[in-house]
Length: 346
Image 1 (cartoon, one colour):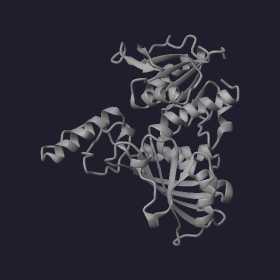
Image 2 (cartoon, helix red, strand yellow):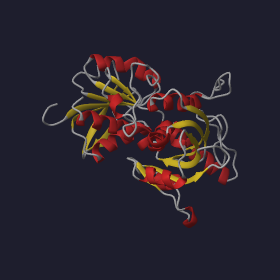
Image 3 (cartoon, helix red, strand yellow):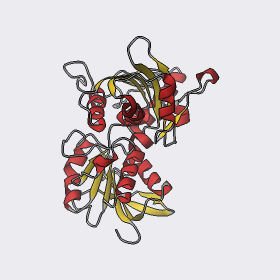
């Protein structure tokens, strides 16, 4: 590292997650010597601010990574697969927020509060997990360390921003039309209207059948497979139902977790309250519990409604909420970069 910091590139710099990545690098005072903003030809030429100075967006190409130390990427899996190998060849470390490399056995899948050691095994690429997986494993980690998680049943209530900036604008138009009593416009982001609706289908590409032969979407399979990889325990059983809801930002999850050894609700609260990255909000008698409206724009994973499930042995119910653009995506990536800096691995 030069005395003035690292040369950083953001791939997908004009997207919802790329925007938050840029903001977080500034907010958290990451040691940036230079910042290169990369996007498609449609966005090239725009200027975006960083530390009070305008930065021009460049068109992403195979030669974009000369002299770059760190790449933060969130521009879609096909883009990552095509371009990140060129970044690695140029000597950069890449932290990728797409699904392109998450299940590659040679690529670490990292949540710093859960498996920071895995980041140090990278061979040029580190994968950022799915947004819903990140907040869940942050909440599961202290319970797993104390009593070993055996089975997880999770239902998600995922905000619209998880589908991208275009989805947010389309949702606003649909909601406005519904309130005005007008026909709801269609959107390529939603197979059915999202206005005042819940869609039990979160997947990439609504034009084809998004369900596998067993009836699961790729979002559900991500949560199942990624959790096992991050927790580094193949014996954990996970099942998921993922739902898009008309909330702009913030993912909420109802999690039922069974452990090998019994944890009382009070003991679980104690463990969660002192765990890194978690804020316990659990006073339901006074209407205190996590909500996406409270989590939006904030960094922690919020946990509440902790209670024992008396229908099963050693089981607890949790309600977990986080900002999907921050901890669910951009923040986790920047935290991985900060981890690499602390460990001298960047």
